[in-house]
Length: 394
Image 1 (cartoon, rainbow, N blue to C red):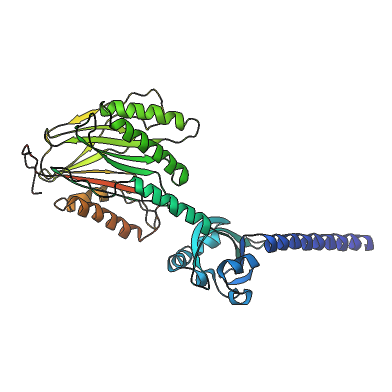
Image 2: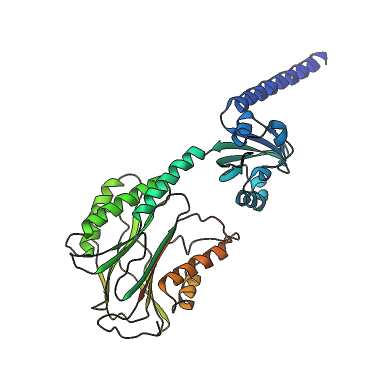
């Protein structure tokens, strides 16, 4: 019996020593790491922080204890924490971005790795934040975003017979969506062209591929050739760049000849553009076969044709980030809702139609950050020199 008690006590002492060693090792990591660290109870009240976090936001240790992360957050980040408090506690691990406010008023963009602490019965007893200061990283992204924005159309073009508007809202500082307006497509003096593209993913990698695609398309579109030839050569070029990366790019490339009253387009894996006819009150999808760019280097793209444009028709080309956007309940914005906005505002100017879509989208998501870039181009057919027939009040 004495021997059994001795063994039990020895095992307990050994376990306590191992626990103390583990805690000491953990403490050294927390103290010496350059990452900020916050330890919170189940109500997200801060019970411990390291020196790195104190330096990050400029508050002393005692000034931080007893508060919650939201007490040092921007209003947007505060609302995120409040809205997602239950999810933060229920998931073992989460990664998200936010912005803390330093004591001197500076905004400190951060990347947070959140870990939930549970007891032996699985009950939540606390939470840990490991916080990375993203200030310098964000500065670099801001510069990259400025460069990327400079590559996009700076204003809506003035094309006789057309009212045109386009816009991108990126989900990160830089994105993989793309739109452009091209003159002299197919040959110098040729019809006006518009292109909308969407690179898989977003962020730096997607932005670099988008920039490459833009440069090649602009160069090739300035030379003679049909749009099917242009897209086929563009695909051959991009396929070599994305080889073995798993990346690709969808594209919708369209030319509009108002004098002849026709559209020509190539669809490379992109969602079809829509034409809304106010007089007939109906939508038509501009479909057509075609793989996404970068999938098959030898793929030959086909050109599609539609004639008989009419005054007042509205053409919209977007990226799937719009209709796939979700609200806090997980419900998708959807194409039906998107079409209804176009129908309701069809008599308005192109820019007003475009802004109506973004406004409704923002109301639907309640400002929830999008998981994808949001791109839309709206083109309204006006009276042309060749006197297009009227399809309704424009």
